[in-house]
Image 1 (cartoon, rainbow, N blue to C red):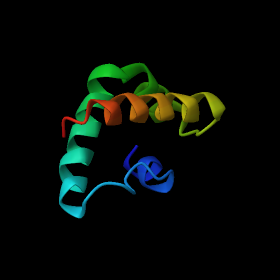
Image 2: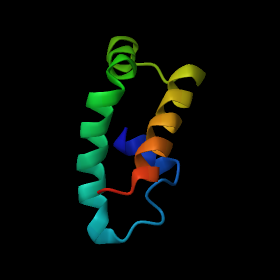
Image 3: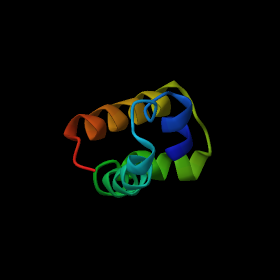
Length: 68
């Protein structure tokens, strides 16, 4: 999820000192709220359109909270 976020520009507007807290919060949010998606990624090792869509949803939701 961290690599996807970086590759897709979700970190571009963050100040450097915010990247670490953002990543830590993102991982916790992912585990807590998108466990099914995490399991799918772990089981398949795939990055298909459905998984990519789920990752974008996760990142959009998390980023909109701005609580990192």
